[in-house]
Image (cartoon, rainbow, N blue to C red; front, side):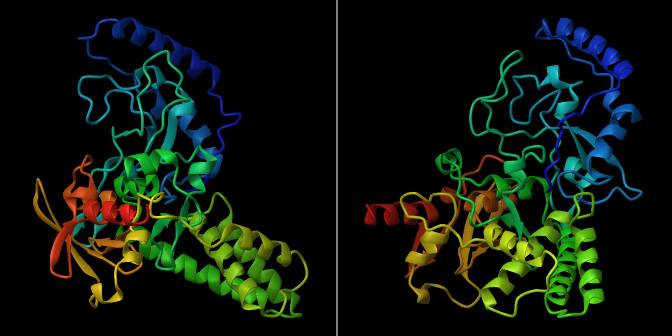
Length: 392
């Protein structure tokens, strides 16, 4: 996910005039709580879509996949008609014609269809828009809302996402959880990855290949010695793969940052002159070690919990997690580094793993998952609470 700067985005005047008339009708219709609101789909018109495409190119703002002969949508970040799970309320109808609420989305991110092997990855974003706090009504400020779904328009949200060498999107470990995430025992990155299937087969395979290529180019650049031609070739290739408009460029940029950090830590010879030293320094700042956390202050993922378990508690392949949802039994595997493997995909948090396994957006993974250690079966919540009690 790359940050999309909406500064200066305006709609063409003729489009804006028509949108204002449609919004006026919506205001009149919304006075009748029982009346179904009807929307003219002005956001589908080239007049507005072309201006959105111009911001970071013809790619999805969520997963960064290019629109190559595939349908794409002008998604309403805050759903216009309804919000899933809140049948008694209308959606954000007053934002239906507000370009600041538009996000370009591929079909998989918006409507589903992605795959984890032979399993469906779910329905996509659609009208899902969970919050960590209260929802705003028409006329109220949106600044107080705390969306679970990461927003590419918010720079801080885009910066939360990192990638491993296998191409999996994940939370950057050096970024602390917000107080609201800790209160709700969930991770916004994990939930976004789950809802949008950002670790589907196509994406992880493509990003992994891209990451390998960038790492190789960085190594070529750093070891080119006095060969200016080789250094220039590698630098130009890296710049092309990491530019904002490039496909999956966030993964490419992460690969460059961490490859430079690894080189910096290795103590190898200094890179060639011409600006590379600044790149290494930027990589070191962006790839810091995870911040230390305490058991009492870390209630979202399992890193502290697994650190408290004896090594012999982890058989080869990890500890089996079991739960039962509306679809029946669910299974996952807890690894020694605190990750949970579900549908052969890694997640950092119990709640997102449980929701992926069950298809239930409301389940609490800490009480859902159970595991057996030393012959005793307990929920993750029980283990966590006992750990917190032990550490005061």
